[in-house]
Image (cartoon, rainbow, N blue to C red; front, top):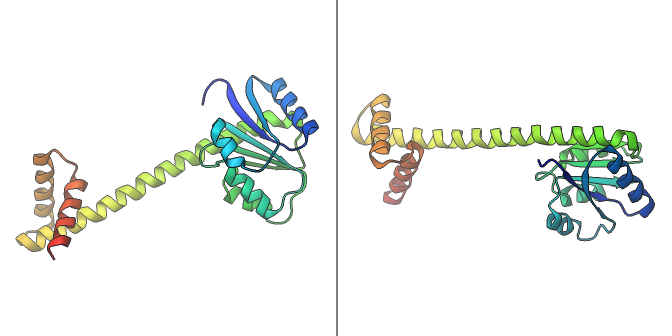
Length: 194
C-alpha cells in the first residue's frame, strides 16, 4: 500500500463524519473522502478505489451490515466497521462478509489508528491465505490432470507409471510447454476421440 493511505469514510451524520475525519487527521497523513449516502455505495467506492474503507453505523441490522460490507469491496481492501450496538451473531456475519475489523461500542478517536492498522494487517494476512489457497487448488487440479494423462499413456503403451511420467515430461520439454498443459491437451484430445 502507498505511503499516504486513501480512506473512504462511510458516515451519514455530518457531525460524526467531521469527528472521524478530524481524528484521522490527528492520527496521520491520509487522503480522506466521506460518503454520506449509502445508495450506490459500491459504485462510489469503486470509483475512488481507496486503500481502506471505514464504516460507522449506529445500530446495524444483519442485512444492512452485509450489504455495507459487500459494497465496500472486502476482498479488494481492508474494511473497518464501527458500530454502537451489535445484536447476537452480527460480528460473525461481518467477519464472514469480509470485514477486517468489527468494533462494537462506537468509534473512539484514540482507537481509530490502531484499529485501522489491525484491519490492514488482518486483510493482508487473509489476502496471502487466499492466494496460497488458490495456488494450492490449481496445483492439485494440475496434479489430477497429469495423473489422468499418465493413466492414459500407461494403458495405451502398456508401460509403468514412472515410464508414463517420463514420456509425458519428455513431450512437455520437446514442445517447450508445462507438463500440466501437455497433460491437459492429451486428456482433452482423448475426450474428443472417444
